[in-house]
Length: 72
Length: 404
Image: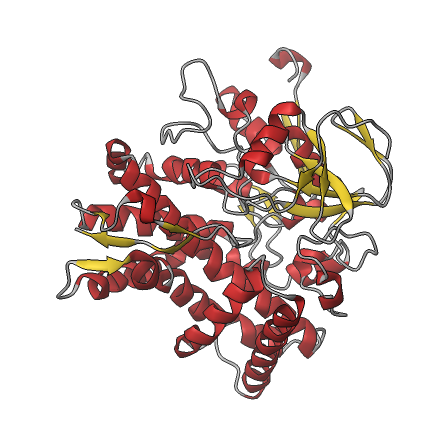
């Protein structure tokens, strides 16, 4: 799974950090989203999908890899 | 208009039912049962759409073809005549990007999740002291006046740099501004009083800056005094009214569901329990106004450019397809073990509540400490005498007499 963040769309709600703190962070300088990791384990996929669905600004996009099963 | 409505238009704001005051007005629930989008009549007589479905509410609030700018000539106001109150400098809640992002980003740093986490000990201290004061030498208190309102007021005063001694003034003016029965004259007076107060405070902070949000806003050279006052007003009202009413409503509901109170004592269950309270109680009962900038397909209908839409958070949060399940109680019921994380109680889209990490921390600490310290907490009046704020844009309780 790949995670793409669009910092221009980030509104700093903190939803991603509250729900998936090991992956997402808020930058100390501009308060915008930052990724702590760029490769993900399968057990994180549900959390990443949730973070994408809950991001109010639509700043987080997840792309399912061909090999990781049906796309959601 | 593009479709023939099959249900009569809902008059906004609709009255609450006397029977269960923890529920949103029945007219909204009935509209939601009939379909995700309904015609509605605003208090000023204009027509608009009422979006009640979860998907439609999220679309209205996040799709940039819907505007939050109240200077738009067709913006749907929930108070008749409120269009006259629009200033040249609306708070960022009522602006679109890029104006919105420019102003919001000036204060996002103060509400970062890590910043709020670091504030937890201070919030705990404020909660402990409020409870000490409420219980000292007494066996009965008004939970609203003695706990639910002081806690978030103290927290936002600390953050913003507003003197807590001025609480009577700003709490009173805020109640007027949020009251759906206030006349336009009264609203204008209250808005002017609070903006004048904040402009004065910001001017003093400019001379002698302190470590607070108003000082940081007042000393920026890319922000006018009017813009700083508008941001201050938004944060001050949103900072104390919403959380205060969530604390009092949550307490009243939990006193009615004593079998669920034990979940608050489990630190692992507490955050989820607060999400469920936010979902079920959704204190913005009147909905969130937007205006379409283009034609948009929504809920099987075309919303035309220039039409207003009210996004009803409370019905979206009771959508069975999102929050229900065969193994769960109805979404009209409190279920502190429900996965409620998808709720839209804080709104959705770029205007989603900026202070939500702080609100969550305050609610978690306030409710766990209150029920932990006062296991015998119970209402001091019969249930039928509880006074709900049925005439406010922020739903809640006028008072909550309790004993322990």
